[in-house]
Each structure stands twice: as C-alpha cells, then as structure tokens.
Amino acid sequence: MGFALLFFCGASQHVIHADDSEYMSRPLAVVASAGLERFEEDVVRLATVSEHEDLLNIYQKLKNNINKLPGVDKTRPFGAAIVLRRDILDSPAGIAFLPVTDGTSLVKSLQQKLPVITDVSDGRWKVKLPKLQLHIHLQDDYLLISQNEELLSLVTEDFLAEIQVQTKLNDLYARVDFLGLSEPVRSSFVRKINNDMKKEEIRKPEESDDEFRLRSQLIELIKATFLHVVSDSQSLTAGIQIESEVAVNLHWKAKTDSVLATQLNHLELDPSKVSLQTNGDAPFQAQLGVKIPQELQAFLLEAFHLARKQIKDEIGPQLAEMDRGPLKGAFDALEKTVQRGDLIATIAFNESNQNNMILLAGLNIMESDLVKNFLETILPYVRDSEDIQEVELNFHQSKGLSLHRLQGRNQREEDRRLYGDSASLFVGVSSDRFWIALGDKQTPDLLEERVQRKGSPNAGQILAIEFSLDPWLVLAEKHQHDLKKIKMVRQAIPNAEDDRITFELKAVPDGLSASLNAQAGYFKLFGIALKEDQKKNKQRSKSE
Image 1: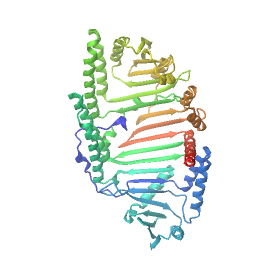
Image 2: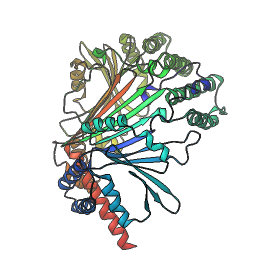
Image 3: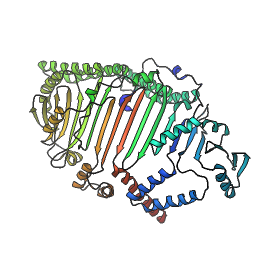
Image 4: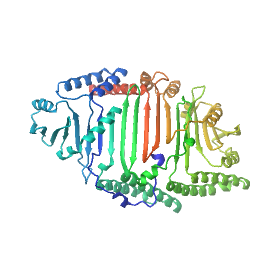
C-alpha cells in the first residue's frame, strides 16, 4: 500500500497499549483448503492443461495412500492454524484440523503403523515423539491435532462453521486475525521498526537544515503509520478461486472507530473522478485515484516549498525577467493541487501500427492554463541542451489538449526496442491533467482519444490495473529478445486469448479490498513453469 501511506500526526508509542483482553480468543492465522475432492480437481486440471504427467503421478500416489486410510472425509475443508505465545514470537504452536467420517477408525488404522500413538480416553490420543508430543482430539467430526492440548479448545463450532462457509466460495482460504497478536508482541514490532529507523535519523554531512528537518518529519510519519497499522488492524483475509480462470480476493479490515479506520474511510474520491478509462485492449493501463490524508498533505506541502525554493535559486537567475512570472504561476498551480488533496494518476502503454509501444502518463493539476503558459515559456530554453536535437512548440493543438514535441539526440537501445526508432517525447496539458507521452507520430492522436474518452464510474475504486501479455511477447519476438523464455510462455499463451490480468483496489467500510483475476493462460503457464523447474532439478541431480 505504498501509494497511500497513512500518516498520523502526534502519534506516540502509548497507542500500542490497547485492550489485550481478546488475545487468544482465536488463532493468529488460519489456512484452509476446500477439501480433498476439490483439491484433486485443481491438481488434475493443472496437470492436464500443462501436460505435466509427473505432477499427476505424484498426486495419484498420494491419493492412493489417502484412500487406504478409513474414515477420511474428502468433501469438507481441512487446514491448519497458528497461535503465538503471549510474550515472544518464537516457538509458535500449530493446530491441524482434518474432517473425518469415522475418526476412531482412522486413528486405529494409524496406530497399526505408528505405535507412538497411544490412547488417552474416548476420542483422545497422544503421539509421543523423541522431542515432541502431539495431542489428538475427536470433535465435531474433525480430528484436531496440536502440541499444546489447551489450544484445541480454540477450534470451536463457530470457527469450523466459518471455515465451511469460506471454503464453499474459495478453493483456498487464509485469514490473519490481529487479535492473535498480544500487546507485548505488538510492542516488540514497534520497537523493532523504531530501532531500524534510528540509523536514518542521523544527519548526513551534505544535508541543509531544511532537508534534515523534512527527512526527520518523514521518518516520524512512517513510524507513526506503522504503529497504527500494527495496533489498529483487525484482520486480513484472502481467498483463491480456481476455475478456467484464477481469482484472488483480499480484504484488510481495521478496528471500527480506530485512527486507522478513520484514515481508510477517507481515501475514496468521488467515483466520477476516478473511473477507469479503458479501451479493453491496451497492453497495460492503470489509474489511481485517492484522497491524500491531511497529515500527508502537510508533509508534501513542506517538501514542495523546499523544492520550489531550490528550483527558484537554481533556475530563476537563468531566466529572463519576463519569464519568471510563468515559473511562479506553475508553482502556484502545483501548490493548489496538493492543497486540494486529490491524487489522480494515469499510465498506459498502447500499441502503435509498427508493433511498438506508446507510453501515456497523466497527473491531475489545478489551473492547467498556468502550467500551459509555463511550458511554452520554459521549453525554448531546453533547445540549448546537448541531449535535445529539436523542440517543436504547439505540435498538437485542440480544444482539449495542447502538446509540445521534444526529439532527443541519443536514444537508448532499450528505448529504441520499446518505442521505435522515431520516438519523440511529448509534454502538455489538457483541461485538468499534465501529460507526458513517449512514442511515434501516432502518439498525439492516441492521447487525444484518451482525453476525450469518458470512463465508467466505479464506487470505491482507488486503483485499477489491466495487463495483456501477448503484445509484449510480440515485441520481444520482433527484436529476437530472450526467445528461450518466450518459447516456454507461448506454450501457455500462443496468441491474444487468455492473456489478460486485471487488478482492482477498492475502499470499503473500515478497510480495503483487492481483487486479482488472471485468465486461463496464466494457470497453464504456472503448470508449465513447474514442469520446467522439475526438469532442471532432475538434470542438476544427475550432474551431481
């Protein structure tokens, strides 16, 4: 969540000493699978689409061994949980839960092969190993296993019911419950980050007073943010669904009425401002829209004022007297943008007719006319740079967009492969955005199209990303770059079908939710990568 560091003023370490009464009410972390039957379906599907016969054979052997055990229920979820000790992070305790149709028969079958399993009472057994003792309880048609017998009471009927609900929706479910972190453990996290940051608090020899003060303020804000994330987080859940596509859903929830919850509840912008403008076939596009917390705004303004002073001192004397006004106007526009607190950013890669990429990047600004005037004033000075071959002012003019073109002298080889031999840099403004673009002669038209396009409002949306792999593979093939890896990827994604990934981050009450969807080609690619890795391991073993 690097884009939205939640900074808090006046925070101190006493906040971490919250109510600790709910500690141990449930495990810190839980991971559960939807059941052996669904697990088998996923493995078979993966092995089939990737033609990974060894994976199928390995699972078949495991399945045969499981089938020999009486009383295992393959239809209900199984998994494990972790519980931390109150005072230290070392030696966490584990709890495994396995669904059974006849737990007693299953344990008796295991006892024939493992004499270390002994009877304690009806539905209770012990496993005595050299350095470890495990306890087994039969409860609610589940075998519960742990090295700490007291912890088995945490696996309640409600706990198992929740796992049942979640695994009906997901093939794999995981949850971190921050109530499983005791106050001493939470405090140890905070002390560690404070100690790690101490070396950053030392003043550097080349720093001015203003730079050191600003950096110190940033360090305090980071520490305060970490403090509230540790103390105010309630839970983090994840679910994975595997069909022809793979879907991953995450949900982070803060404690209601906490400082963290308050900050998260104020991140969302007006949906009409941040709707994702998508044409559905761009190789990559992302849009971010977030309300900057007031404390972070204050810090950014301090940083902006320092940068403004430094730029004025360095560039101001080189400008003609009449040209200093536009420089001031541009700074005023940027300052008003920061004060407003809306951060809206767009970045996209589009394909040109020559199968090269065109980069479009935009950032919201207030009073774009002031920035437009500044660009028209400052760009003629750029002609004197040894890196710039040509500057063409007002290269593209329309009602909604003004662009200038800069042509560099020495293009880097990686830029040539990506953007083509005739790529230029374009800078300009639309009614509410500052734009930078890099590409060939199609670039202004593509940017004009994006400026004019209206997206669909999506309530709560903070970040949206879309990615297609095929255009990047085409570009690599065109330049004969890394063909061995491309060949492997092409087995899974031979064309533009099944090559898309989408990601969305949304604001929800007292938290954030994220969803990632990957089309079927990536599931197949995962299986092929496993197969290739297995081949390498076999070859390595033979050579040794």
